[in-house]
Structures are given as structure tokens and as C-alpha cells.
Image 1: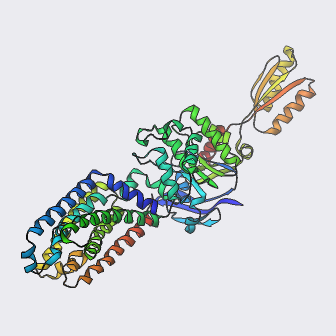
Image 2: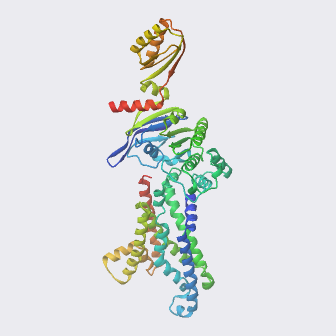
Length: 229
Length: 309
């Protein structure tokens, strides 16, 4: 499994899209940290304190990470099925190892990116926001799990790109919409998105998103195990 | 001990039955040839056995492990699947290193390079596979199937698209691997290849095995025409004419010349009868050669048997 994780991790760092995402992520993080540091006093008065340094990064993650994640992870399984490279793998290891390996490879990529992005804030905040790191990892893992699920369910990688972009736009919209407009359908849908849990006062809610991630990964595995390759 | 046992193995795609209640037993240490026309179900059968495709019904045991416990034998089998491709930006060595890690092996780079030399890819070890020809990819496919020194090796069309010189090399390699005790299961459209390499052969049609056995057993079951060449003492014209007439009642396509005769019989008993007759006529036979039916003839005979049935 770890061989697949490592290959997935390395291949993500080699793609142009991933490099662009890293540049944007780091650029926005440094930019927002510098900006926030200029208004430190005013932000403290508003009660945002030191957390203000990561507001830029978290805002970027909330709005753009669905798009970032789906654009690089939407085809992690179906592309290998399309190209038939999966046939060598599937005769050498179990399907569990393939799915978990790919999931962990993608998560590892984002763990590194987010850790480095938050390390870039340390000179301004003078502390490392470990809880924020964990929460942001859980947040992107939701979309990694969703992308993995899509790439297992949908055969065509072009189609998962399209569906992935649609969902990446729809989920933040539903999540934000539920904050300002009370409606049974929108509220129900919002429970399926991570935004509901990330906008609750009690930050412990964010860990409930782990259940969504587990559901996505287990569902991907069950579908993949039944597929003819 | 059996390397493989399939019991009523069936695969259906919608209404189409590709493999139909197939039963097969393969002993360890044999080179088993699986023949059949396109669409006969050969590749689907291999894909089911190697875990790429789920059987619709039926069971199998691979190296003693049942089909729902394939996890336990993955490191003991090698597979060259049909229609498979490599990661374009990986070199041959990168592939072998990766697959070796996936299998959990501790293979050294030198061992992997030796494997690539064995399949005649020594000049392309560090070339990315996007620059490989079809034949080179086949060779790499064989190399990756051998990383773990498998107990059973599945080769689906190992020489299709490979140049003649390389085919000889691959045949030598297959014989060497088999001599080391590995069971080899290969499919091929090249009947000559199967006849030369395989110790046991099965012919598949419409999803079922039509016949199975050693080459000798297949000849006994399906040989229809046996060509016999006889070298004999010089015959005068009268004797020659007499033999021509008499042999024509026992054999087909009789051609008696002054020193050589050729004829086609239906069974080995007819050869004995003709030989006795020649002896009774005081014809000195110097040499009697029986031209055995090739696998191609058996394959064609079987096809016509099935059609007429």
C-alpha cells in the first residue's frame, strides 16, 4: 500500500496543475499574512487575535480547495482503469491497498502543502497553528475522499473533471447559502457538506467530517472491488 | 499437486456468456497452452483467475487458495495480462522497482537489471516506456511478471507483436523458467508456438473447453489424416501399378513411384495393414515415415467436428 501511496504522492508533485496550486496556496498565505500583520491591532480589537494570520489561508481553502483538490485528484482511479495500467497493479496487490494507497497519497500531498503554507505564517504569528492544520487537513480530505469516490464511480476521467468542477462550485454555495437562508432542503444538504460543521461555534463539530471521509473511502472500495478491470 | 482447479467457472456480460461452466485442472510444473479463436473466452478466463474480473458463478483454486482468498497467493503468481499499458514517464527499471515494492519484495537493482537482460531489454533499461515499441512493451510485461519468481506464470499472448528473433529468446526464457519448476499457463494464436512449447494443451471455443491433453493425446483424439512416406526397393511397372490399385482401396491420395510411395490413412491400424501387405508382396521397405498431424490440423479438424455436430 505504501508503494502506491508514495507513487501517488510523487506524481502529484510532478503535475503542472499541482505546482500551480502550490504557488497560489503559498502566495496567498504569505500575502494574507503580511496584510493581516499590518492590521494586527484592529483585528485584536475585533477578537480575532493571532488567528487572523490564517484567515487568508482558511478562506482560500474554504472557497478554492474543492476546486484545487478535484482538479488534481478527480482521475486517480479511473485514469488508471482507462489507460489499463491498473491491470498490472491489481494482479500484484489487493484492491484495498490500491484505494487506501491512492487516498493516503493524495492526503500526504495536501498535508505537506498545508504544513508548509502554515509554516510560512510562523514568522508573523510566532506560533504554529497545529489545530488549524489538523482542521484544514480534514477539510481537504473530505474533497479527496469525494474525488476518489467520483473517480471510482464514473468511468471517464473527462466526466469526473466536469462533475468534480460542478460539485466544487455547488458545495460551497450550498454550505454558505444554508448560513443565511433557512430552508429544509438546503439545511439537509448542508449536513452533507463540510461547511456546516466548520461554521459551528463548537470546533469539535469539524471532526464529524471524518465520518463523511470514511463513508467516501469505504464506498469507493466497495465499488472498486466489484469492478472488472 | 494441482496448480489450478476451476469448477463450473462462468462469466456473463449481460446476456452474453463468455466463459460457460468451465472445468479445468492444471498440474504443477507443466507448460499449459490455451488455444482458441478471438472471443473464445481465453483472456476472460485468465482475467478471472488472476483477479481482474469477477466470475459470475463457479469457483476456482489457485495454488490451493480459493478464489475468495486470492490475497494469499498474489505474491506467488506472475501475470502478463492482455491489453495492459505502462506508466509513460517511467523507465523499464522504474516499473520493476515500483512493482517490486508493491509486491513487498526486497529485490536489488542488479537483480532487476538482470531480469531486463533476460528479456533482451538491456539497451532500454533507462528509456521511458512512452518511447518503447509494442514488442518492447511485451518484453517488459514478461519481466514484470517474473519479478517475484512466481510459482505459476500466466502469459496472455506473450509473443504477439514481437519480432522473430525476440520470439526465440522468449521461448528460451519460458523453457528455462519451466525447467526451474514454474507452472506456465499461456494463451497464443500461434499454434506452432504452442505445439513447440507446451506439454499440455486445451482448445477453447464458445466459452468451453472442447478438448484437452498432451499433443499425443490430441492427435489420438482428433487426427483424421496421417500422411505416410515409404522408401522401398525399385519396383517394376507391373508391381507399381498393382500396388497403386491395391493401396488405393486402403488409403487416400496414393502415389506409388518406382522407389517411393506416399499415401494418407485415417488411423495407425491402416499403416500396419499396408505394411503387412507390402511385406506379403515381397516389397523391401527401407524406410517408413509417418508425418504427424500438426496442432494446426487438429485445431482445424476440431473446428469442423464442432460445426458438423
